[in-house]
Image (tube, rainbow, N blue to C red; front, side, top):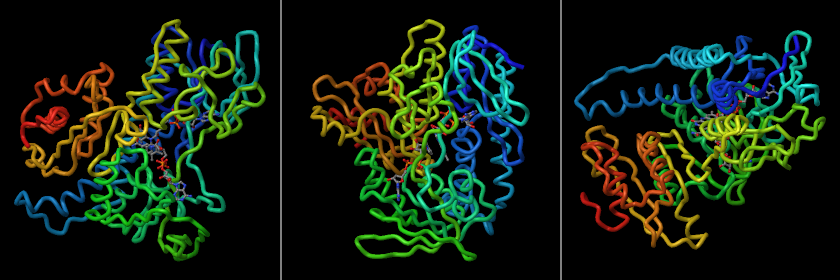
Length: 476
Ligand code: FAD
Ligand code: NAD
């Protein structure tokens, strides 16, 4: 049955579902179109992040880290564990249970906020008496609903390599890589980006021999140069990830024994034989069959919906948020855009501070940063001071056996305003929050240096790095 809404979100990932909740809080009549189905064929909310992204990957991360701890880090505490094993089926079941809890949680939130879930594929179909028409096609006959505002939040999907079909058995994108039925003895990964490193590390901890082929000659190009160096040392030399930079991928063939990847390295032809391959070479926006052409919604040359700083598209009352628009493909960036758009529609004046969006790479140790890197400041000719402090001399880090990494604070040479904070630490994802708050409030390094940090805690390292900006770290 056709219905009229104030706003229809297409897509229920973090961008769409958070935007929908905020719009409902502001008194709007809201619907969300979502077509996702679980492997069992059940309709599900939550998008990539909850179903096959952030949430399941962090569940496996925790399981694999627990196993590694038992194997390699208990003896130092005087705890002997003999014959530790793991049950991958149980690990996967735990992950699935967490995913189900989270996606069902969104169903609950939709009911609580009186948000209508329109199950099926959404397509912009034209204009009607009440505004934009959105056609929803699912199992039954398609329906056309109308809305004053439409928010495209259709997210992204894994980018494939030409001529390398993904079957999610031998050749996997993020979906298959989170659901292996057994630990591959030899795992190949194409792309040493966020997914390659996070999932490569998960399977390495569970026993796979992991080889990562990366096209670029540099490692973690978006990260600060000190982070790149530290991460390279830890992941390759200490943890045994075999990362080959500057690899030019050729033919990829599958057979009964696994996958063969031909590639060129330093002008020499090389071959990688592996049991399973993960292709993690970036993601592309979901704009297929969205009706963009039919209604004149402007996409850029890479298929992203073109938007301004407030996520307005070229069409009146049509917004786009999350992975389907420019900017980092991060769940929290999409969430902030969802909130902003709902509040704009309600007549408020919100904005997203794109300069203070934290990045986290959930490896072990974790990598997190906010703001600019040292190489960016240098290239932009911004005068800066830097303070760096290691976890190795922090009492809490020693007690927890988590001494890897450092905090690096970059501040303006004249004003002392914090311009970037870069952390390598087992708890970097949590520690970075202090830096984000500081940057939102345009704090100086001196501000952090003068705040009392609990002792003993890892956060003391942030203070020490802020003190080090003026060469007055206390514990070094
Ligand atoms: P999505 O989450 O992709 O959701 C879009 C939804 O729209 C999907 O459910 C899709 O079915 C639906 N849809 C698409 N087209 C239509 C249509 N026409 N009709 C109806 N429905 C449609 N980010 C982080 O910040 N932290 C992390 O730790 C993290 N880990 C990740 C791990 C992995 C393995 C992957 C793959 C990604 C990870 N990300 C992480 C990135 C994060 O998942 C995305 O940035 C985030 O999901 C984007 O949210 P979104 O709402 O824009 O889109
Ligand atoms: P990515 O952009 O992080 O990394 C892709 C890597 O593949 C790059 O290093 C790139 O140089 C390399 N590459 C590209 N083409 C190649 C080729 N032909 N051969 C070899 N290497 C090649 O992409 P991703 O790892 O697929 O992740 C996609 C996005 O998902 C990320 O950019 C991120 O925004 C998001 N994500 C975020 C998190 C997180 O926040 N912790 C976790 C996972 C994914």
